[in-house]
Length: 334
Image 1 (cartoon, rainbow, N blue to C red):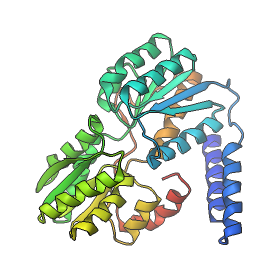
Image 2 (cartoon, rainbow, N blue to C red):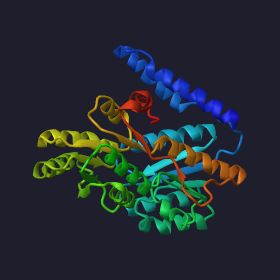
Image 3 (cartoon, rainbow, N blue to C red):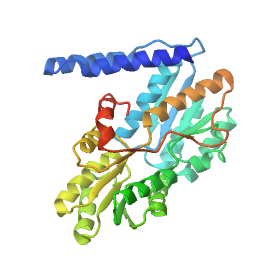
Image 4 (cartoon, one colour):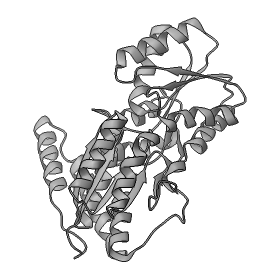
């Protein structure tokens, strides 16, 4: 494990060095080329067989959160000599079919999200019947053990929502709008419910069409125009935070915009005060640990969590921490 930590530290230090190289357009291109080359190379830190692990998520196209999850998974896969396969679909039935396809390929391990657990139950059961170990990640912590998964890695969404409510209390907020961009996602419902559990003010849920940012912007803007007493907007994903900022401007609102999840844009807007705070669940760590735990199980029958979720969050990030984390968000690890 000491060797593993050293290898990762060297790899991440190298990645950081690449990200900071060159400020001219030519230098930037060289740095980007070097980054791509580095991500495609690397040597395994172990001599175990080259197992194949598949990760299947409920991500839609272009979601930067899942890019960070993949970055962590790919880094661990290189270290652990793993052939890593990634696929995704925002529609639960199609996601289940991707799990079935991984089972048919006879992969050695599966990592899966349970945003819509009822639709995924049969596919997960089929994987386990085929003798393929399963780890759930990000969503579905309450169903993971019942479905027979080895472990769940992520944040408890209710606890994360409660942390938001407590932070809003500290800030003296009175009325919050919680933006749900994916109907049927149990984790999103739990987040907003958690906010209501601890927030001393009132919380209203607003469902928006998350696949259309113009729709998201117009829906939030219309709500802020109609109700000037709303002093906080809470988005449930980093890409939606900036859209909420634009909606706020359209409506002439003074509401604070806060968000779940962190990326480079969110870090920048935290630093300049455009956003109030963010809730980081460390997606890089979710991907990395999922691959690493599957490898540990295959190699040594190790299991973490004791039947409880292995928590990667929540961590409240404010302007005070944003500058320190910004460099990590730019390299795609936070």
